[in-house]
Image (cartoon, rainbow, N blue to C red; front, side, top):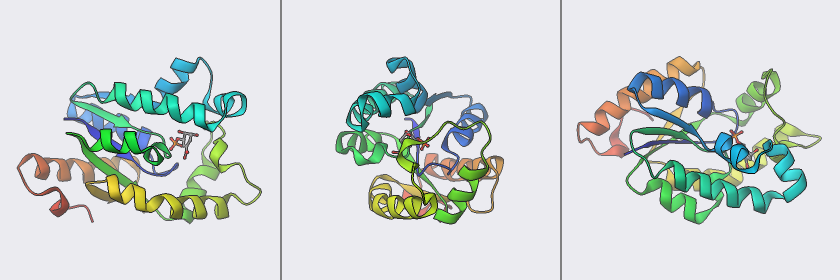
Length: 183
Ligand code: S3P
């Protein structure tokens, strides 16, 4: 089994994923990093030079490769759920957790992030409106794939990890996933 972290940009998937993997003694895989390695360039250049469809193909391959292992925490890009094959693959024998937050919270986090790369999907004169619309569009897919939803509202990444670890131990104890202690 792997734990897959899904959710919109700014929900903290990569930071939380890395911390969670350390806590569990598991391997951490970030599909955005794998895509950049495979393409030999940053994501914003893949979008600019090869287009979104090419990026999604690389992302599907990265998701497939990441999930071939086990005892991994896998953070996937915010748009990975738009691909039906990736959605199916993520749920296949893995625990999928949706990290969630309000659009305004995501906007604030993304606007204040210092070292972050530009996100091509969010390039817009009105980024908050773009985040709100794209998130609303994707929310049904996030919710279709996720076994459980973890609100990150008001929590730092450590706090999110604590919340996830308690829900994972419940899942490993054989509790139905929908009844885990996360919203
Ligand atoms: C994307 C989100 C990004 C990255 C790419 C596309 C999206 O990942 O995969 O820029 O479609 O929402 P993060 O969720 O890590 O920002």
